[in-house]
Length: 299
Image 1 (cartoon, rainbow, N blue to C red):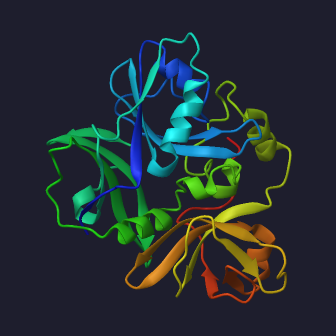
Image 2 (cartoon, rainbow, N blue to C red; image 1 turned 120 degrees about the vertical axis):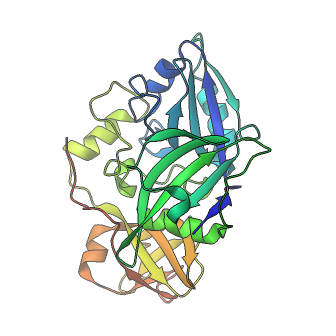
């Protein structure tokens, strides 16, 4: 494997005495108790509990928190978060140009435990959950450098990195899927992106109700096929041609095979009916499962 510049990612910086406290009240994750040695996944929801964005989050000292997210929704996310700062001592800014992100995979990513942060030559090393490729784990990490530095590793194709994102089972919200999913629909709570013991945040009641009061009807699955897939693309069951059964959250290509992390009706997957991309007669997709148990964790 190797390293690839992640042009489709960006970084939001929150800086100030109230930075962690402010974000704690906006995101699905505990920010106030985030140690510098740890990386956390977090979501930013609308009042209806739908994910506007998702973040890989870490901090540098007591007054700086960094949020890595999809570049195509960063401006809108930054604007919306800024609306709620009010009198808090927190300045939000786009730090993407200053802090370019690289994706590391395989030996280049190392083998440390997931969701950890460490210093590395020329930058920061953020360990992510591994991808499961043909039953074998492939290490992944984000490398945060400077505009004039790059990790010392072979070149990696962006489509391969995106496929590894899919095969890790960790959804990243992009512009095409913003406001489409409650966190549980894309397994965000299963990969540590939702803290149910923290205080309130926008959409918290909806997210909590989905967890404790109802039966989840949708989850994210890994699907494979022979056709190019795109985030936001609908997936259909052959027996229900007029009603989509799911939506592509992320997509990539690995060794000539197209893979996607797709939010699906659980019943449609369990029924075993043929799945198709784009329409009920579109290219067929084969369902699999993310590299973790889909049973709900209510802790």
